[in-house]
Amino acid sequence: MSKVVERLVCRKLVVYLNKHGFLPTLQSAYRRFHSTETSVLKLVCDALLAADRVEVSLLGFFDLSDAFDAVHQEILLDHLREMFGLRGQVLD
Image (cartoon, rainbow, N blue to C red; front, side, top):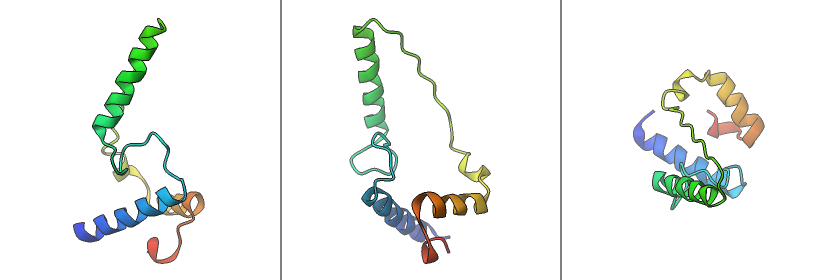
């Protein structure tokens, strides 16, 4: 699939997911006005608030950059159908 088509599909899918409230509130990826910086600021703020309450904070990071390549296409399509109600041309 060409990069132009991928960007178009991504843009349309994000609009649909936002419209129907499928994206978690704190998700920064693919969100307008959100970035890695937004996520880092939220983490720092939460850690500082916890420190003010004399609580211990533990933070773990996972690199999921290759995870999408490991997903079986039919399982992904089934998930998109069941969880998000995507049908027809969108899945084709």
